[in-house]
View 1 (cartoon, rainbow, N blue to C red):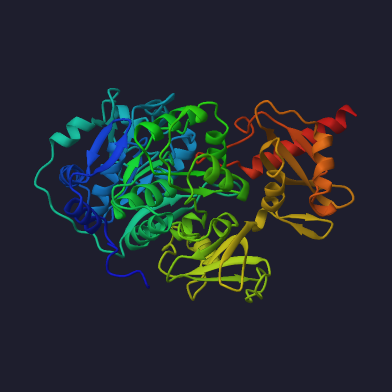
View 2: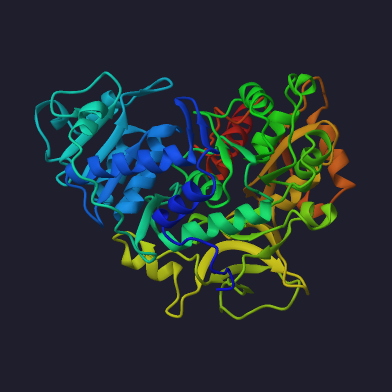
Length: 538
């Protein structure tokens, strides 16, 4: 695998290593408190004892519906040391979506906040599991027999966090093995039901270790990440990257640029993580100019323009980019902090060590020549064990010889570097020509007035499909859609130029995922609605 013996491959080994090497170094700074690595090891053992007394055993599926903080962190790690499986629940889902994840994963116990930000989770759960008031399990969720509530609103058939901890008996000690499933991560379903991605301990811990090294995390660094812990970018690339690299994780309940900037300054953060939406919110916020930041590096999943600005304007000269997906634990390829900046911002990334990456014809599976665009396929230590209770979907994603079919487009250069080109299903077919939305978006991001651009495909009577653009302008800038399209005609091939363009204030009302990614399917539906409405008026 070419990683070496210094990388722990179980949660317990990672905890022991951190507590031994850096007991007094802060492990986490969160809205609900701070904790050193030494204190973290002790608290994880306490929570593990309470879990065992609550009947949790190796292999059990345990739901976590909590915000970023100490409770989520210690619970996730304690479950991992027991060999139990965490099922993080997206705290922004609707009641029916939460019920689906709990039912499909056959969660036996659920840890939930009573409230988080503006959401009433007890009210949400009551809609699909009225047994929380009268007795569990109930017909809606026959596998769920215990709910533990963090907060004061504890229904009659549930137990509060303090009561749960008070029943702790003897600590059974760690029981997990590297091959054990650590996490079931539900992908955000857009055209089908969400799938529960099963990720192994060694895959997540190794990915966190390597990704942190390539980002430049060192012992004593301080990493700001508002990535939600219910997402694999929160568990692997925030929690485990920091644990594996003896780095302090500075987190928050929800990303808000003014508060993020304040935290980065106050906590002397050396690194931060975000997608291009988050990075642009930081860069364009009026508070940025007044904050004295200590940033040295960052991991940003975004366009070249955003990465260049992060390096130049936020001081994160070691900024890197990465490509991954939940099914690969998640990072498949990443640039490295020691490489030249021009290479790091270009989006050409080295596959993680020990992984095989090919670019193939999606129809035939044949490997393509250097520079040709095709489907990215991955094989090796980071690939998922499969989708929980979905053998047919697993067979569609994993070949018999272990290749993960990512559904993403990319190309490899002569040095073996991977460049992500977009989602296979998002490709716009303009008159028979393939257009990558990400490529067109990157070109729009070069315009000085453009803060963010999103490209989708819409129907066209002559060309079957054409590009449509939604653009957010920088604060104080003003440009007409017609002028922006005229500029675009000089910057890209004619068939790539959007036929329709709308200036919008934000994407919140149109559709954002819980990880602050714009949902292309909702954008495309909104574009079709706008075009239909305009046709009706005309």
